[in-house]
Length: 179
Image (cartoon, rainbow, N blue to C red):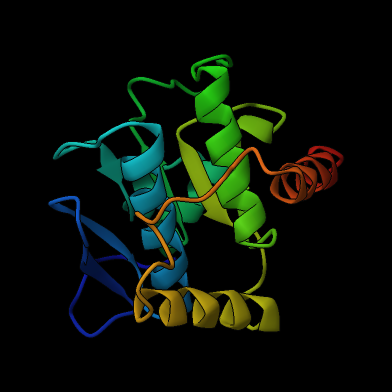
């Protein structure tokens, strides 16, 4: 857990390219992955506005024992928490859910969606691996390479309905739902 943003700590406010939004998150691999989630949400699920994304939160403001507590370490974000209140399900249309599942599969299970939790929070996206898990570094590296390649990464068209992408998304959904 981090007690503040900045001040030489591991939590910093970062700009989310193409959105006009800033978010406070853990720097490094986590930042790369969570910013990607925000960008794809913005481009493919629904356009985000200032105030729609909540990153780091003071440890005193999160409910301990719930996934939202990851925000206190800068490893989780909430997108429109007021639209998708904790404890409720069904806040997304099917086409939006397909994109969310595709984003999660693209990130190879590094991110978990709060909509799959026992106490659902459809606004929550959190890192689902430990900080030294090599998959986190691998996925962040892939995303960084995409950001330097024309035609790759967030904002570029992908066929979320292709059979390979749907199969990967369904497989990950089943794995994450069973935990």
